[in-house]
Image (cartoon, rainbow, N blue to C red; front, side):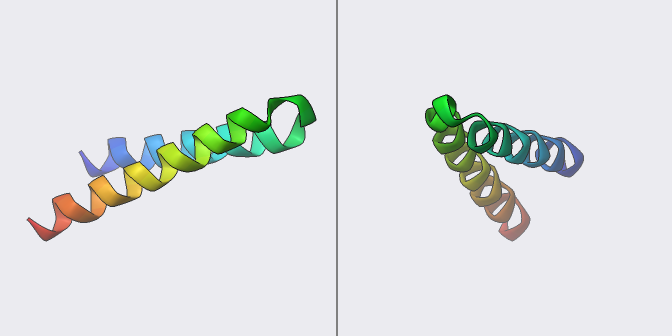
Length: 49
């Protein structure tokens, strides 16, 4: 499960970087950052429980 969350986090960082690289896709950056943060929170909560 942790490996899946790490894979998702890396994928979301890639989406965020792609959104910054292509100026017209700023929304892609925003979505990537939000999804990265959500993945981090889910991972943190699963470790605590």
